[in-house]
Image 1 (spheres, rainbow, N blue to C red):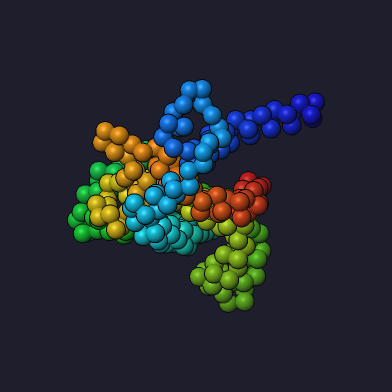
Image 2: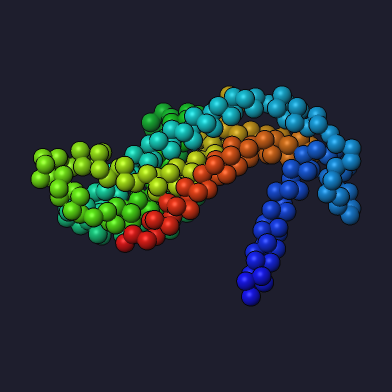
Length: 269
C-alpha cells in the first residue's frame, strides 16, 4: 500500500512539473520548434540567443531591481504590521475585538478586482500613480491572511511568559518586541516567503498603476514581449524562465521554513 501511495505521489509530481520543464526546454528552441506537431521536448538545435535577446531587448536589469525593491519593502512592512495586529487581536482586550476580527477576515473573501477602482481613485488623490508607493503601501499595510496566520501562533504562546515580564516591569511594547516577536521566527519566515513570492508574481497592480517602463516590474516587462499581431514565443518563454529564478531560489532555500512555520501555526490554537 505504501508503494502505491508513493507511486501516486511521484506521478502527481511529474504531471505538475511537466509544464515548467517544457517552458525551460522551450526557451532553448526557435519558433518552428515550439509549434512543431507532434511536440518535441528536447531542442534541436539549441538556441542560446533567446536569453541574450530577452535580457537586452528590454530593461530587464531595471525591472529586476524594481521587483526586488517592491517585494522586499512589502515583506518587511507586512511582517511588522501583521505581527503587531496579530498580537493585538490575540492578547489585547478591547471592545468589539472579536467582531472586528471576523470582519477583518471577511475581507479575504472579497476579490481584489472589486476593490481596484476605489484603490485606484485613492492612489490618484494621493498622487501615487506611476509610483512604486501605489503597490508597496496597500499591500504592506493590509494582509488579512498574514494576521490570521500569526494570531494563531500568538494564541499558543503561554501567557505565563508575558505575565512574568509584566511583573518585571515590561510594558506591552517591550513584551511584543523582546518576547513575542522572537518566538514568531518560524511563522514569520514562512510568511516572508509567501509574501515575497506573491509580490514578485504580482501583475495586476503594476499593470494598472504603473505607466513608465523604467518603473515596470518583471512580470509586467515580460508582458511587453507580446506583440499586437505576432509574438516571439521563444524569447518570451526565455524571459519568463529568467523571471522565475528568484522565486525558485526563495522556495528551495525556504521550503523547510514554510513547512515548519505552517506546522507550528497549525498546532497552536
